[in-house]
Every structure is written in structure tokens, then in C-alpha cells.
Image 1 (cartoon, rainbow, N blue to C red):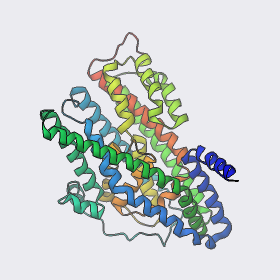
Image 2: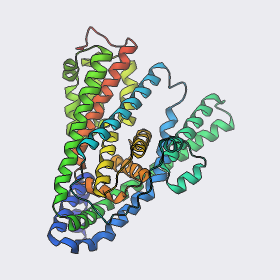
Image 3: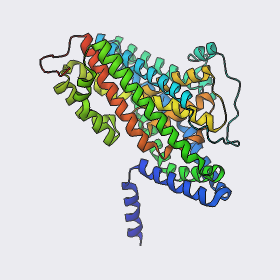
Length: 422
């Protein structure tokens, strides 16, 4: 009997966590539709999942961003490296803006309003306060308050400062040794948080089931139509980002090449990303397309593509803006321009560090929702369809990696035109 139970558990664990959460999402929704208001008795199980998500926000952001800054030294950020990082950040900012604009046009989530969500909206801060809030007066106070922009900016500044001091200091000195030790401690902390995130996501199967049962018990079937609208909004945003930003803006106008030829050259990478939902897993195909089809020299793509798979999350960052608008509509709260700008800044900075985190989209969503005061419990509403939406986001990410790589290679004369299809 024990062996049988162990075998069932191993079979259960063999199913990828995203699919288990999707199944929990579907089953919980059905339970809510069938039992109605009685399903809200499951709400405490969902509330526990929300508390766990909130618990990991600050440490995961601090550890991962300091680790991300470990490689951002002055020597690594040379001409090509600096261009790659800057353009990645610009395309991510544009992607978030596209997501926010499309969301304001389509207004996903307007079909139903939750009146008893865990949200107490405050007056929107002025734009100047949002911008000044990027730099915290007291980093410890920012962590205690959950001021995500302040936490993110301080973590990046501190990490880059550590990298700069280590590079400028005698490797044999106690200061260099201390910084290396501190980085090792941070790396160990990040690994611990990855394990904690894994545990939280494992419990997320129960949490999402409970939250969706309670949600559909309260709202009924209308939420299904709203989720379809959410998916459609992301699809439109991805098409705009790929077509207007990557193909027209970068490839046609800045590189001066044919967008059709570019798409033909990266089709393998786009299809692979759509299939396996992993920028890192697609990396061998992405690098092969850049080398063999686009003619980009290894000196460029060897740096830009692995970095892009790590920090360039245009599709995910775009989705955060869409999910925030969706959630604000569901809970009946209007997000001001200042709050939407805060979403843009938070998602942009958070994307640098959380790309390698298991369940990265949920972690980033928790960070963004906390920054603008939206209920973290609303994440359950979109967790079930995340595997489908993640395919679109990953294809967007990989396309953006290759477009930026091609642009930087063009600027530096690092495209071999004799073997490039561009």
C-alpha cells in the first residue's frame, strides 16, 4: 500500500507544475460553478497561498537582483555589452507600454466586478512622487513597507556597487575576498529562495483550486468570458510588439533589412519557443538561427542571446501590464496614469532579476500587484491559463532577443552579408 502511494505521488510529481496548476484551475472553477456560494468555504486554503506569495516577494527580489548585478561590471559593459543592455531595457519598456495601451482599449475584466476583494484603494500619488519613489530614503523601511520600486533600485545599486569595488580592488585584498564571500552568500540565499518558491508553487495547486472555487462560486460563468478577453488582449499586444517594434521599427527602419527575410531566418526559434515555452531551452536554436541564417558574428550573439534569455522578458513584462489592468477592472478600481507608470517601472526593473526564478511570471506579478495595491489573490484568476499565454510570451521574448542581437550586430559591422539572408 505504501509502495502504491509512493508510486502515485511520483506519477503526480512527474507532471509539470504548470499543468498541475492548470488542472487545479479547471477543477476549482467547476466546483465553484456547481456548488455556488458554498464553495467559498475553501477560501482560507487560497488565502494561505496568497500569504506564501507575499512572504517571498522581498527576499526573492533582493537576492536575484544582486545576483543579476554580479556580471554588470564596467569591463563587461563595454560598447557592445552596453548597447545590448540598453536596447533590451528599451524594448521591454515599450512592450509594457504596448500592453498597457492595448489593455486600456480592450478593458479585459470589465464583465464582472468583485465587491469583497482584499483591496483598499488609496488616492493615486502624483507622477513626481512615483518617480522620486524609485530611490528610497531608507532601504530597510522600503522593505518593511513593501515599496517594490525602492527595494528593486537599492538592490541593483548595491549589487552594481559590489561588482565595481571588486573589479577595482586587488584580488588578494581582504575587501575583494569579502565581496566575493558576500556574493557567495547572496547566491546561496537565491538558491534557497528558488527552493522555497518551488515549495510555494507545489502548494499553489491546492491554493489555486481553492481560490478558483471560491471565485466562481461568487461570480458564476461570466469569468470565463473575461479570461478569453484577457487572452485575446495579450495576443493583440504580442502581434503589435512583434510587427511594429521588432519587424518594422528595428529590422526595417534601423537595420534596413527585409522583415520577411528576418522572420524566415528565425522561424525555427519562434516555433520552438512557442512549443516548449522556454527562452533558455530555445537558446541552441536561437543561436543557430543567428549564426547560420542571419549571419551574426559569435562575438555579438554569444553575449546577447544568453543574456537575453536571462533578462529580456518583453512578453512577460507586457503581460504584467495587461494582468494589472484586468485585475483592476475585476476588483472595480481605476488605475491612474501615475499608477500605470509605476507598473511600467516596477515590471521593467523586476524583469532583470526574476527571469531565472521558477514561476517567474507569478513572482513578477506578485511584485507588480503589491506595488500598486492590487490584491495578490487575483493571481489565481490567470494562473490556470498561464501555460497557454506563456507560449505567446516566450515566442515574443525570443523574437525580441534576435531582433536586438541583429540591430547591435548591424551597428558594429558584425553581420556577415555573404551568408546572411537579410
